Amino acid sequence: MPPNLFYGTGIPACIIVLDKENAESRKGIFIIDASKGFMKDGNKNRLREQDIHKIVDVFNKQIELEKYSKIVSLSKIEENEFNLNITRYIDTQEAEDIQDIEAHLLGDIPDSDIKALNNYWEVYPSLRNDLFAKSNRKNYSKLKIAQEEIKQTIFSHPEFLDYNKKVNTVFDKWKNKNTPILKGMKIGIKPKKLIHNLSEDLLSHFSNLNLIDKYDIYQHLLTYWMETMQDDVYDIADDGWKAGNEVEWDAKGKIFEGRLIPKKLIINRYFDKEQKAIEILESEREDYSRQLEEIEEEYGGDDGLLEEVKNEKGKILRKSVVERIRVLIQAKPLEYTHLAADAPVENDNEENELSILRKYLDISDKESEIGKKQTEALKELDKKVLDKFKILSEDEIKVLVVDDKWISTIYNDVQSELQRISQRLTQRIKELAERYETPLPQLNNEVQSLEKKVHTRLSKIGFEWK
Image (cartoon, rainbow, N blue to C red; front, top):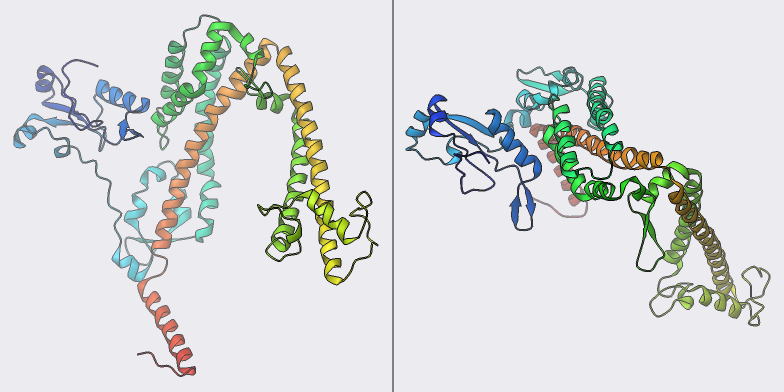
């Protein structure tokens, strides 16, 4: 850290004071309150990479940010008897969400609440007019659409779509610049230098976008680096791209995974047809499982028709179903069959029980058959994937690792930030609409109407409520 700094005791909040010469030339000191930027780590608060980077950037560039950093004059400090308590100079309190009494009485949404979303309207200038119309009363607006249409209106708005395209264009520029660098890695590459360059360049690319926080994007990359990407890069630095041909087995030697490449990426790129066939089998098996569950729910309770075939844990066993069918149709041990529809039974109750048992057994057999097909298909797919790992070329490995694994994950993180921003706007507008949807007089009328109905109902049965 630079010299001549003083830190407050309220970590992660900090005061950064310029040295005496700079303080006098700037006529004040520079204060940063980073108390809102941290993550919970057990019973401690820990600064994230994005928090540290923001503190350093703001300090080095002497940037004043609302509720975060400020140059405080020496005279102001003297007025406060040289007390350097942060809260005396930087107000970090969240603005109170004030309930508007007039809006509760007369309806409509206060313009002040809509104006508070101005950071969105700067990016989506015409969206505000598409959502709200001026009320007959000054300083109030009406929602122009139904509440259930808010999300669709926002997410389909041309300005919303244009902004998403703009963000994606910025990401594509970063991707196109850095993908060749990633694919050009060789044995001996310096991972720490690589991630420093990647992250700083990502931060730079997203610096001129409104709404989306460049430090949030930066943190996504650093988090992915620590969780996954750095291990991959160190493997490449040690063994080169041939590490992409290697697989690792579990302790029992039955389940494998790629050292660099998750086998699901191999499947997605080379064996999509086989995977879809397995998914169809899985869907069919789940359908049969649901049918069995429905039968168990309807007939498997105490004194139900399936009571005789449950074990001590209340589970229905196939062998018990088969044995019960044999008893009902009075067959010899090897002569029973759930297909023996004409076999005689004692009474209608047994006939009904037999019908349910045959249905259960038939569905159970179909489920088992589909399960066997699915297991075989999975084994065959695993064999194909394992064989493919062995023959992957270096170029194929680079595409799978860089494009399908790394870049794809970072792109999805950017999209998640876009979704989070949009959901926040949608939720706030819904909240305001619901808050002032029903004015108080209307609520009173509804209460009075319901009260009259209650009085009428009570009087009919001989009661009076005063």
